[in-house]
Length: 260
Image (cartoon, rainbow, N blue to C red; front, top):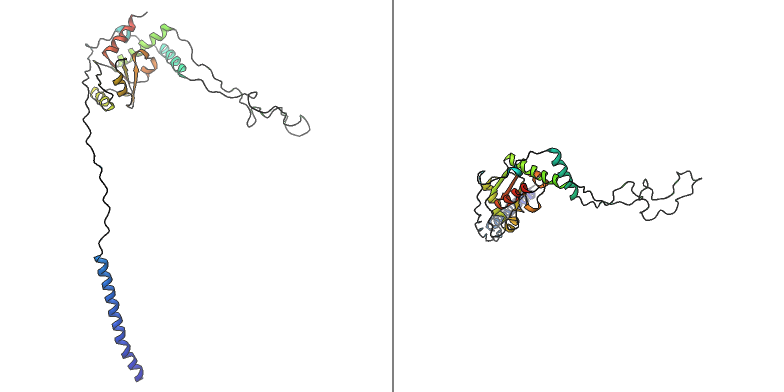
């Protein structure tokens, strides 16, 4: 018993010294962890943003009803649905490419040999493997390239154009400006011009051959279609809610009333 007591007395100081050493090691590890600096984040290189140049908006003056003289022979014609419908249908039919094409059973490659004999097999009789109801066969009554356009009398087309312009004029959705003086194509300037005029969309902008810069400025805007006055048709007018045109284009349109 005495020997055991001596051994326990000897082990007590050893356990105490081990615990002290472990505590010292842990304290040093904590000090090192605190002393380590946090990893530096790489600074992102900031791109120099150059200030945008101010957009020069051309001075566009909207003409009032007295200044913009709309000819009653062109802008005061009573619209008739039947005439407009015929003109629109003819113009849309003329736009169709008509290139859809399929092959009949006689145009499909192969199928010249009878698949099996007429009788004795238990199957349905068949004369060719290119029959329309067979996979890989021809198409029955499929489309072929054709021209969808049809004739509309010249006077009816001219009257329909006047009726379409009269319909927009009656709604008060035709805006006439003195001009569109664009020195260079600039879409931002065109958007600013439309904001100042307060137009409704979709919008049709009618120009002439001398307004090339204006045409390139307006054509990129969403909801805006640009058309030369000499190529104007009924579909262009009926597909938009408002029309913007210059005084020179107005003179050309007023001249439609003098034609027979």
